[in-house]
Length: 353
Image: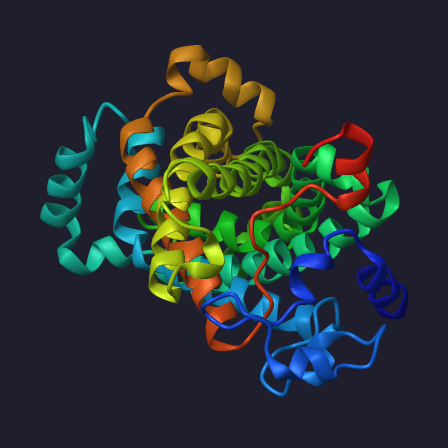
């Protein structure tokens, strides 16, 4: 499988931005001139990982683990109150009241409930989400050819992110179910070690995957928006806002653009995926109910409970995730794509200079 992916990566239309080594001033380095024709520049560069190699995909997965695991764990208190708002709005009237009630009943330590399933679940999800996104983006772009990959690049981003998230949610579902039970069912369990055996004993293996379909409904649109909106926002920022080309920006300036684009994408992500998020929270609290039953019980307005804290949480999360992921790429010398450029062959066809 990986051999085929490696061959695809070497021929992908997304290859071009990564096969050129540049100094900060945009000039070509002596290393590039010395490369044997047809051989990847990254293979000749001692510091940079070869684009499309197994190492490239593996390190992207590491970046995903760090970006998702760290950020989701950092906002556990906000996530806990958001989940409680979704399942019991009579008791937790708003965001600030939710924090007040939680601290009054459980102390400040109560805000950390569910940190372990959050950390392990979203670390696993991040590995698949970011690692497989890079795999599928290369594959799909290669399948439709260089010119179409540029013209329909948004569809490539959407398809690659949806495919990656499908597998990422299978890894996340069991731990997400445990997290919701710990956070929203008083007395059920206080730790992951308590929750998992109890869930297995009461409902069997279905306890861990009964929320998978609504999780797909929440996470796949979220991830499609997260990646496609981010990619397009970065492209627009460099084109219309940043006063100089990306290769003339410092690493710090590039990461600032990444953070801004990530936050914008996060706001859209939160809105698109919120109804399914409410259903997931309520479903894992209600034994024997289906996603349809829960949605019907909540009604249209009920599926928007807790939207404000989720926008704050997801906007911040998404921005930090992209910032960390891009930062890991910088630290580990993983190729980072510049904004896409129209292929020369397409420029000739369209008469573009």
